Amino acid sequence: MIELTDQPIDIACVLAAVTDPACGAEVLFIGTTRQWTSEATEAQSAERPRSRETSHLVYDGYHEMAMAQLQRLADSAKTRWPVRKLAIVHRLGRVDPMEASVAVAVSCPHRSEAFEAAKWLIDELKHQVPIWKQEHYVQSGAEWIHPTDGNCRCTTPAHPLPNASADSLARPQPTALGSKKALQQQSQQQSQQQ
Amino acid sequence: MNDHPNRLSSASLPTQTVVVRLFAGATEIAGARSLTVRVPVPISLNAIAACICAAEPRLSDLVAISRWAVNNEFVESDFQWPILTTEAAHEIAMIPPVSGG
Image (cartoon, rainbow over all chains, first blue to last red; front, side):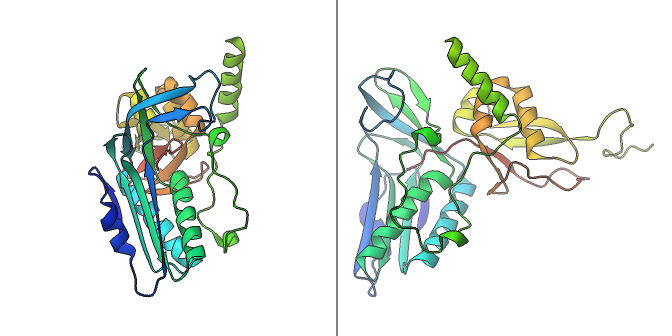
């Protein structure tokens, strides 16, 4: 079950999609829209207010590629862990606070592999799937979120993932365009001037 | 000389029109879901990126941190097409850092 939807995610349906008689463990992750983002959870500049209130999110997606990438992640997860069934559903369009933006569910014979597979899937989704959120703030306007390495909050796994060397879905790096250095220098100069 | 599109006069390099799909912040900046640029043949992503920056300088910062996709798959920035004699049958997309989840 892999879906992009502009409707509320039916969590019971997601869980039902992974229930399997050979599995003693189903792990379900639900990513919800945060209403309040505090400094403690927002590793960005100190210029921002202590806590910002989000009115809602709007998700944009490259639909065809997002579906293809989700399928690649699903296939990859099944080669890494004994995943029997798997479900990933992501919202597009407007999502209000406390609503589910994304649901990831896996079933495995045992819990440790189910936890690992679900964590890997949501971590990879956040890097590999062309979906973007636009934060609409209660106080001031809206902005598209384009995280760079400096504000990525993913942690390095304590243990290397199985088959990590054979992974065709390695952690992405921004493309090294010819103009990139020049642009960085330019933006550094601008920030120094400010 | 004939009128074949890729055999223009020696004074001008052959070029081809390429449509690049845009998303999220790039759409907002460009005010459009795609951008059409003329790039030299053979086409490379680096050349497309440079043309986008020239056509819409306000996209430059985002171009610098974006990845690229061809036919729904990420490709490296040094990706280059073989010489094309017809319209590019490839869907090209600029993928700014993603923020799903």
